[in-house]
Amino acid sequence: MRIISKLIPLFIIVPLAELAILIQLGRWIGVWDTIWLCIITAIAGGFLVQLEGLKVWLKLHVELIQGKMPTDQLIDGVLILTGGIMLLVPGIITDLIGLTLLLPFTRFLYRGWLKKKYEKRVRFVGQSGYYGQRKKAEVKVIEDLRPKIED
View 1 (cartoon, one colour):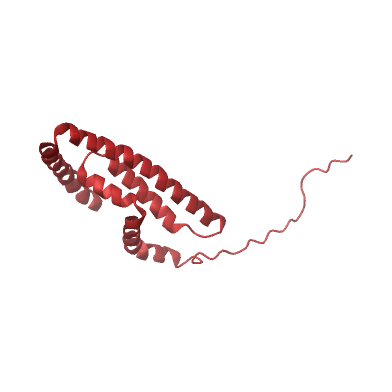
View 2 (cartoon, one colour; view 1 turned 90 degrees about the vertical axis):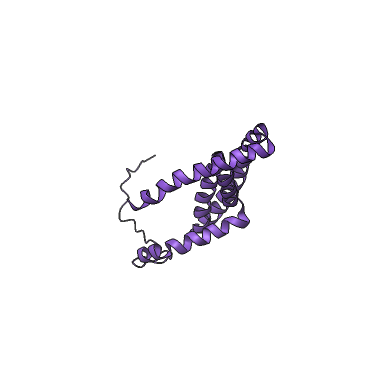
């Protein structure tokens, strides 16, 4: 219930603010230019999502191969997805926030904030674990149960 009480004002205030800004922008630069601006930001955002998403995917793959936990890349992936969705929504406020989520030199600010916000939860869960250290599994073959094929 707590998250819903935060989302309801967000779903009311943000669209109204976006509408007011788009109306003012339409008066200032013209209706068609405003419409084209929304279309261009959505298309450019789509390309940026693909580019940044591919970069993060490759970094994630490299870290997994190296046996590291790709925490930053997982967070970046969520931020890029969120930024892409925000760029698809018509409006200036959501476009600006979406753009800052997609650009690597501003995305690290969001990543740091998210890490700090959820650090206590992760630390609490990790107290019973190995803190990212891996133990090698010992595998012993007791008996080969496959049928033997004779020539």
